[in-house]
Image (cartoon, rainbow, N blue to C red; front, side, top):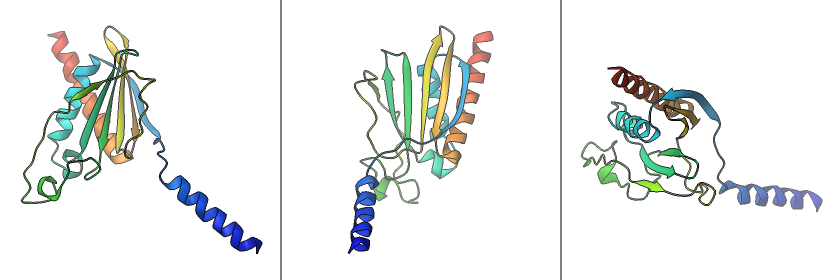
Amino acid sequence: MKIPIAILTLLLSACANSGTFQHKPQRHADRFGGNRAALADCTIGRLQADSRWVISGLGYEVRSYPDIDATEVYAFPLGALPGTYPRNMPTNPDAVGVQEKPVVKVLDYAAHPYTGPSYSFLLMLKRIDDDSVLATVKGNEYEGGIAWESLAACAAASNQAGQK
């Protein structure tokens, strides 16, 4: 009698925890020169223009937190966001592509913790001083690595433009 109860307990606890959101591991962290909002916008633009459909098909949610002077960019895989249907998925050759710039949500950091769907990566840009930000990427290694490369390219372009 004890074995079936133990198995049932394990199954119930596994089912209870299956819907719980868990943050992904941090992949990258570094300091970059530039404005956090401009870097986030540039990075999203580069990712949307990427030739790989796994990257160009990501959906984005951008959150700005004036209270901590930070910006978060959440990237979601195909189909994770509402409004993604077969007619507009990048994997569909007959799809009608819509690459809209995401609307920035201005929120208080502590009052709005993330509880949404599982993301591919999270890019956090936090202002350190007037000229630089601390950037971190958490999430999947593949998508997060490409986002990091895009961010680095945007920061390099921003620094070159600022030096001219």
